[in-house]
Length: 377
Image (cartoon, rainbow, N blue to C red; front, side, top):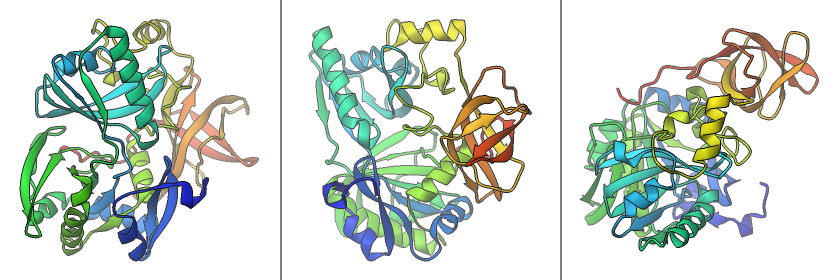
């Protein structure tokens, strides 16, 4: 752990995780389950790919923008175009700096023109809310912005059996990817209000369930029982990382940061280029036109070994042409995979190498994802 555990925030299910053999670790200022006894990361990863996994990601931030013009205000700040979606839909978007680098990536839930719910990353919630408040003050907007970080929990149900788990608990199953519903359901004899969104971070069909913080224990217990009956298991942040890396999905602090622009990171698809305004538009539009000095690629190991983050990428002559942002062993492929920022001259199919503590690990440049995408199955 990078911090004293006594100084870290704890989620609403901390004791449940400890009681069920979780190895806890620091992530974004929170003490979170990394993996559980009984198989570890590989078993949890495999459960998600073949059956179903249950993740507690209640450390994620939550915030809300309310009032007349709330969505129009948010649309002038965040990168993606909320005009592309309708109420009941969610959207992946970015909070950028004026230089076009990434303060955070987040999911925006559009309830109405006057109500937008946001789920940013845990460590960046305060920064995102502060940036929105500064923008509100500058624009003289009358909207209300509230940090709700510890008002709601967030669970992810991911895998081929996700639908069966949701049905067993009596939870709604939005049919369209990135759509959500607000509902009140009876669980454990209680009527519980929650939000369910058809989304996820693993590449498998899945849902994110957002109950009130006080209701998390009841909802989690029902989901955990249904997951076990479906042949799945709880999963920690270790499996979440291997699953998202297999998909080539960006993680803030790795592929996304205030040192990396949205163009370099390859997430320009989450930018509403034709919008009148968003944070960082001028710098990002200029870089898109001129060409970025780096680009994001996937790397598939051709030698035995495990790629790691923050190691040099070398060409055939040994010259440094980039640096990895993530690296891991893919349980699905039985092979090493990595994501990297490289010189724009690097091309798909190029044979490169990683400098792993002075030893070269051969890799080939590929376009992620590394495995089949099933999110819309």
